[in-house]
Length: 371
Ligand SMILES: Cc1cc2nc3c(=O)[nH]c(=O)nc-3n(C[C@H](O)[C@H](O)[C@H](O)COP(=O)(O)O)c2cc1C
Image 1 (cartoon, helix red, strand yellow):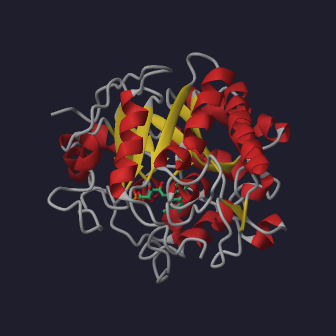
Image 2: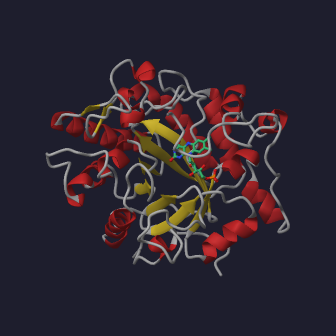
């Protein structure tokens, strides 16, 4: 049984002092031009202070037209560097590995926010998106690579590509959404090309110790579980990344498709030969017992989202008291304020089901996010 408090090394970059990662959590607190705000800085550094072995930023858009939420942090301009530099320094000062999540909303970038028709792999009537030209895909690949270089320049230990939840990388991966006929559409090799081209560019364009992870979600938005398993397998077997982050919304769930039954969704990934790549998971992990159960199911680290919003110092509280039990949700706005959330973030959390007292909430998972 691996302890949640044993260190974890990676093929590149610093080791984590424990197995707790802070999940990427969009919080709408940054400035509209993407500059990291004081509130975003406070919210994140408080989690690093609270003992998370790795602190990941919220999704940061790599192109202005990829902005998915109001107040989203950006990494598409050198103007973002001073804020990012301050953030990386403060996270690392707390002995927490610092990672930026690189993001592009694609068709899920609201028109009102980006001032233009959203772009995707293909025309999409439901989302009002138009297909990117091959040249536009090339420019986006460059923007992801530049985003990683900026993260490195700012002093971050690495980046994670957001390939989950139906955003741009998932839009290209999805055989339903991606109807392209160029080298980025058709076969799985073509649909996954975007991810692999970005990874190759980051390896060439960033230092040899710079960490890279990928986040995938195996269901919804037209994802085919066997295909996502194949992508994960290649990423890990060829050691193209230091860590694979599986976002499942429920770590212990069974697959939704009719063909992959009989074992948990997670076990489709824990059974793969991961070589030196580290594998972790996020989804409804609340109690320490659930975190340990996930570890015992074969992952190398666990990721906390909502539990880390409730307790900025979850790892420290557990380390000090092995009987620690997190507060039940819904929690009060006062509690969240004391945990370092601004009123803007608290308002956003009121939209999430059962999270803030006296608010019903409508968001359960990525299905209704942004739709
Ligand atoms: C408020 C909120 C914002 C989120 N923002 C992001 C994000 O920026 N990038 C991402 O990959 N996932 C995002 N997610 C998903 C979380 O990273 C995590 O996978 C999910 O919340 C499940 O973990 P949990 O049950 O511990 O919260 C978000 C979730 C919440 C609740």
